[in-house]
Image 1: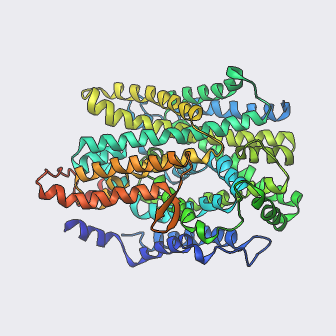
Image 2: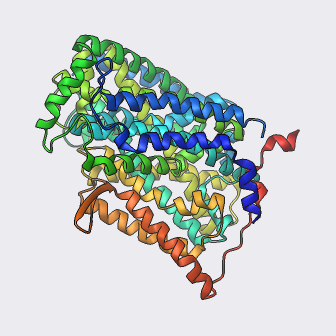
Image 3: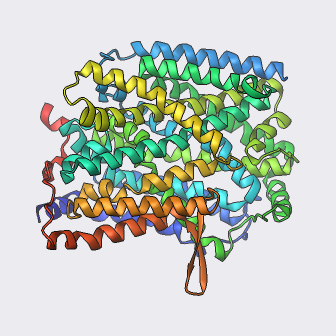
Length: 69
Length: 510
C-alpha cells in the first residue's frame, strides 16, 4: 500500500527512542516504591520527575537526528 | 475580606484585560475571517506556540485540581506527571501529519479532516459534537478554579452576590475573546506564564524552607494521608497500578484530541514548530510536578480547607504575605481564563464549520461564518456554567476526566485516521456510539468519579473509564469493518492523498 511506503520514509530507527518514556513511566513496578529517598524525596516522585528531563532530551535527540528528512 | 490581596489581584486582572483588547491589533489580520479570528492566521512561531500549547496545559487543572487530588488522596494525583511526559513524544510523531493535511486543505477542526478522510458527514458531525461536549466540563473546571480563588479572598456571599465576581470575570473573558479571537489568549498566555513561573519558583523555594524541607513535607503527608476518608497513600500500591497508568495514558491520548489543543497545533506556522515544541514543552511538566506537590505542602502546613479544591489557595494564604498571595491568585485566575478562552474559541470553530456551515447555511459568507463563531463562543461558556451547577465538584478534576472519556471516543477516527482509512465509516460510527454510552455510564455509576472498577472473572480492575470505553469502541470498529464490507455497505471516498500527510508549506514557497 502506498500509505505504508510513506510511513517507512517518515519514521526512522531514531523514532524508537520515543517509545522508551512510555515504558518507563507506564510500567509501575519500575518505580512504585518509597525507597530510596533522595534529598528527602521518595523514589516514586523522584523517578517520575527525572523522566520529564530524560524524555525531553530523547525528543530533542530525535528532532536533531531526523531534522533534514 | 483580604484587601491587600484583592487589590493586587484586581490590578493584574485589569492589566491582562487591557492586553486582551489590545491583542486585536497584534499581527493585524481581518478578524472577520474565521482563519484569522479562530487560528490567528496560522502564523504563530515556536515561541508563541509554546505559550499557547502551554496555556492548554497550565490551567485551573494544574493549580487547583491536581494538588486537590494529591491533598485528598495522595499519590494518585501525581498521574499528571507521567501524563505530560508521554504526551510529547506522541505529538512529535503524530501531530505534524495532522498539521500537513490541515494546511493543505484548510482544515480548522478535526471534524473537517474526518469528513474528507472517511467521506462521512455523519462521522464528522459526531466528532464535532464530542469536541463541543467534552470542552464544556473542561471550561467548567476553569470556572471552579476561578471561583475558588475569588472566594479565598473573601468574595463570598449567598445567591447572586456570591456569584457576581465570577460573572464579572467571565463577562470580561467573553468580551475580549469575542473581539480579538485567538490573538487574545496568545498575547495573555505570555504574561500568564511569567506570573505562574514566578509563583511556582517562589513557592518551591519559600514554602519548603518555612516548612522544614522536603523530607518533612513528605513525612507529614505520609502520616496524614492514611487518616483521610477514603484513606490516601504516598505511593501507589499494586491494586492501583492500572488506575494510575490508565489515567496517565488515557489523559495523554485525550489531550490532543481536544479541539483547543488542535487549535494550538493548527495555528503554528510549520511542521517544525510542532516538533521543536515537543522537546521544549516538557519544561511545563516539570513545573506541573512541583505544583502538584503543593497538595502535600498544604498537608504539612496544617491547612484544613472545606473542600480539597481550597488546599492551594489555603496554603498560599497561610504561607505568603498578602500582596504576594494576591499576585499568585491573579496568576491562577488568569491561568484559568486563557485556556477557557482558547477552549471556547475551539468549540465554536467546531460548531461553525461542522454544524452551521455543513447543515444550516452551506452558502454562508466568510463574514457570517466568523460572526456565528463569535456568538457560539459565548454560548459554550454558558453551557460550561451548567456543568458547575449540576455536577458534584468536590474534586474538580473529575470534570476534566469526564471530558476525557468523551473526547477519547474520537481517537479511532482522528488519530488512526491519520495513518489509514481502512476502518469503515459506519463501523466507526457504531464504535463511537457504544464507546460514548459505556464511558458515560461508567462515570455516572461511580458518581462522576472516572475510575471504574471492572469485574473480570474473580478479580476487580479499577482503571480510567475512558480507556475501557475506547477499547470497546476500537474493538467494535475493527470487527464491524469487514462485516460492513461483506454486506456491501459503501465505503466513504477518501479526499486526501498519502503525500498530503507530509506536506509542508516551505516546499511550495521555496
